[in-house]
Length: 166
Image (cartoon, rainbow, N blue to C red):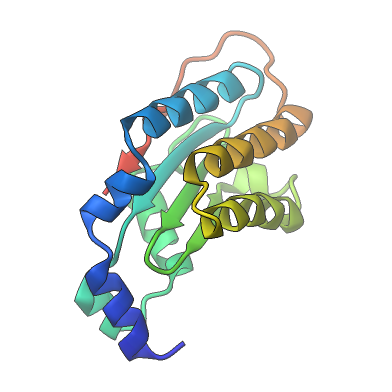
């Protein structure tokens, strides 16, 4: 993809676009889906939606994956007791979903699980089905986490379940 078309896409994808794709009802449903999953597994999930990147990031060629890693660090998703933090990053302008898993999770769950979750979401997003697709992706992620990291007693919620719309 050329830089000009990518820059144009980011310039025309506004915060309003993010609110339209992820209205309050969807963000609330996401928060509930994350909480439901965390009641049956030990991982900690954060979801961040970014409508567009800043122009300087586009000119510098910052990828969605690199931005996801920046946010993983910035929001301290790595800072969990079992190194079990997971970021689901949605870049609306680039139509990308990235999952960054902390080392405790990535050692156990193969990369193809993350690709399948991303595909579930992006396939639905392409049809304009943001609500149903993001919930389906979170449920798919929760199922894999429950299998590999089942809940083993009371544990404190270490990361907020509330999604972030930048």
